[in-house]
Image (tube, rainbow, N blue to C red):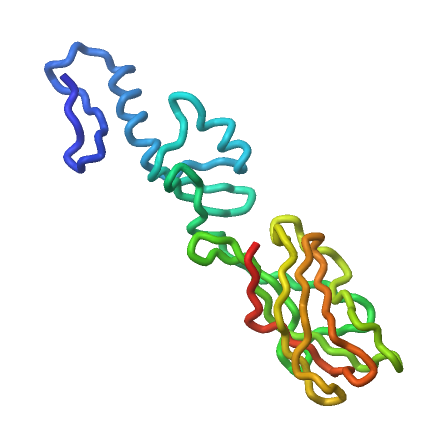
Length: 206
């Protein structure tokens, strides 16, 4: 009769009194160990297509999704992200009129974060603007290229961001992180022409 492992994980181990069946013993060991390790899949869709039927996911399973470099754990019948890759910073291409390193705060960049199991988008750096129209528009899109789909929020995210008080009646503007991947700043006008706009520490939920 098979015995179980001494770590209390319920892994079936062949005993000397069992009838010889090497393939069955190997399969039982693999079936016990593999679900308890970190399973690797090309994507969430590949994981969903593989973990079905007798191999359906159970609480405690852990997977690595290679396309988004994300570690997930199965809790209460759902996949919860516990880690996201190396979170490398990526530079944002700017729209015409804006330049990098406003107020010597560095290049405007973003990275993907995981905070308590929730994916988030974080920014750092600042943009500069040497000149504004006589009467600026009330809103400007900052980036020339949309952020990748993987870091676009599911709904509009609106936050406050700082700006210079030089040539500006305001020290904060409104930032919309849009679902289409564009960053739009609101609040500029005839008396609001800041030479720099900051993004350091801005984090929004995806």
